[in-house]
Amino acid sequence: MSLQMRLLAAFPGRSGRASWSSPEKVRDLMGRPHPSVPVPHELYQVNHVVKDTITTPDGEFTTHSLVPATDDPRDTPLDICIYVHGGGYVHGLSTAHWAFISDIAGSGMKVIVPDYGLAPEYEATAAARLLDAVLDRAVAEADASGLSIRLAADSAGAGLALGWMLDRLDGVEHPGTRQIDRIDRIDRVLLSSPWLDAACSSPGTDELVAEDPWLHPDGLRVAGNAWGRQAGVGSVLVSPLSASDMSLASLPPLHVWSGTRDVLHADATLLSRRTGCGMTVVDGALHNFPLLRTPEGKTARGEIISRLSA
Image 1: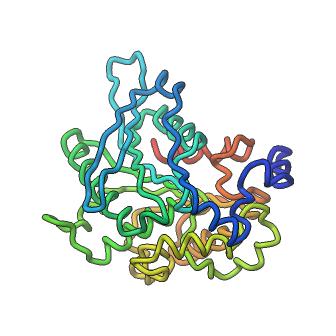
Image 2: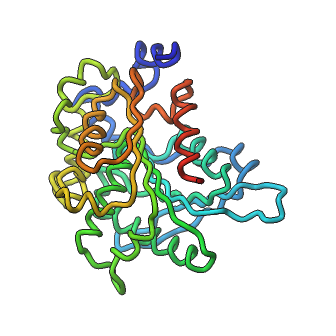
């Protein structure tokens, strides 16, 4: 484990992640809005950024699309990546998310970033409807230009992405067409530190509590209950690990990155065991380490981007 990772673990209050360490702190988080930070100014220097609005039955939501700005006359993306951000369902996009998204775009991809509604005002079914609309647009673009569609997500965003795919693959019909046909267009899924059980009941979770300086299951459950208040905390949409093995087998190829000092490492381990998907485990790494400015984070980002753009 690098010195930077050890320092982040030693001073959780300075990083702000300690706010997830108890139910009381998470309730306080949910009592104050934490919207997405704007796209940082410096990202406009290396990307073409387009802001758009998608209207669903739940309201109007913003999406951003980033394409690398280069001197190459063939200034078009090679493929499309939909990125679903984490934040415990109560935090919007952070500067760390935008930096990672810009790095993905820099590999030659178009990255579409839905800014879904957060708890407690919104919940999982509203976010799923937004992802339906985002995927519809991505499929139309891919069909017109012969592109592939990939999906990347972190933390709670990984739970949302996987739950949404499983929910639609289980037979829920999208207005005008079968959404299962759309999900099948996603040819690979890459997940960082996924939160896949809103009840935090995966085997091994309790044993990891003492190792994790940032997260605690009791705090996470508060956000999970708010996010699942309509669909249900135990639903596939909110807790993808509640899906059957047959449903999990219907997912596109997966790869997961997880650290051993993360209570959600238990979720990643169980997903890998049940699906046989690839998993990169980094000993001593904290939650969502691919987004951290540490040697472990830099290596993981490079691996994720390489797999996305290959």
